[in-house]
Image (cartoon, rainbow, N blue to C red; front, side, top):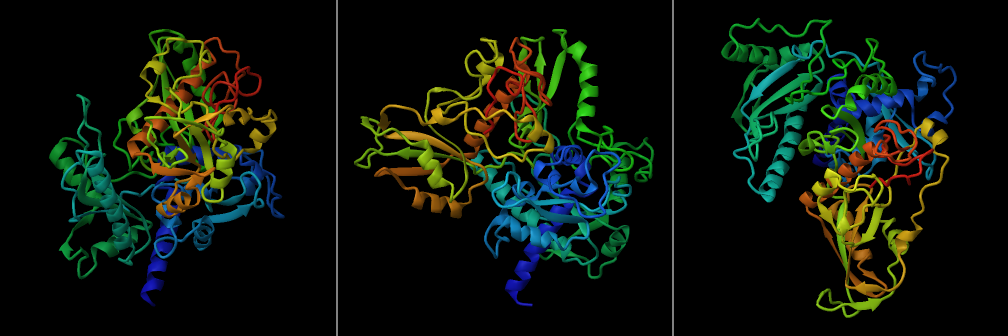
Length: 581
């Protein structure tokens, strides 16, 4: 086998392993974002799927109003947008080049299956992936896992954004090497390789964040079969990494050793029994997500209907939340990320995002590389703001059409001097909202064009009202130059695509255009400000707003963030439907 063939096979193996891991018993019930997406697909599948005729012989599922063929499908494009998968969208040999190529690789799986729904151009059309078997408890995960120490540890936490970015890039590359090393052991299928981390020091007097610091130099590795653990420990010669010897032991032995040191009076650890609730193996937070522990999935592996879970929780909280001394929490969805917002002080109280520092980070979080700034020069090519010149009206529609063949834009706007997170004036009925005061400022408008969404079968029935018009976005009258603007795209823009964008959209109406990426900090600030806006919207309907009944996210609205339901707007309400950017 040639080196190029080996490299291509290695990439394919990595892609298949990652997709299978996302939907595995070891990850899915402990990944809040993916689990919620998966659970919804069983009770309210995408319209493009529900409208596809089921194969002959496929029956209606006894626990769902839909045919079994229509259940459990997740958009492969969504999984491909995760940070761990993004490199595989690069052109060969570094990646596979496209979602179509990823789908071809996933077809080889014994654990998951793929199917292409719809035709090109239809809303929601594309590749979807699902498990081949019911979800089940990872009963013997401890017995199927090993502890390995001796890998190159991270020497220090970065002190600046640039240092932290460099460290993260090195650790991401090391993660790939560790996974490749694990596969090359040839002792059995590897389900996961988890880099163990120290606690990250707290800032401004806050406590340390568990398991979010620098890499310790050791890993937990989970195999699909217990026999693989025995084969791994019996390897002769013993495995090494970059020529360095490694310390090997079962995870059970490692955990028991630590128990004897730190809790010698406690009962010995023997591993989970068959009927016990498995613990979340990936989070050290005080309340890690666990679908089994929260009873979000039945013993048969079928997810409980999300609306039933939400209703039960809402009924228990509603009365107490009216008390000004009690807090009310709601789940919000913005740009594919679910998070909780909390209101204290009653109907007109303070709204804040729960655990804001961690929202949108990690696997399934907000991807970076979607937001850009641009400057349109004066006719002489100058971008100096010492003097301005009047020129033609800026044509948003024309620019978006030029961008679409390169990278699909989510919004394009020129700079304005107004806040990005607060509600538009009068929308909340609360002029002194604490959320408004805390929101970071931006010169770009709050109401921006929406990203694409895959509508569910229920949404198609509900969403018979037309979208709010965006024709006014083009503005009117003369525009002063140089003009600064911002553009956001629906997917991450690679360096190669960015170079193409700068080359093909380097001028507008004879004026030079300069494009730059925004910093990660600026992009995160933008995402958080929009998340705060959606959090404020989720509670705004109870502040006297005339909106209709919302779904997840509360009263006062129809559809909110992508894939969920937020406050403020929708059918039956008088507010306009909120934008999702």
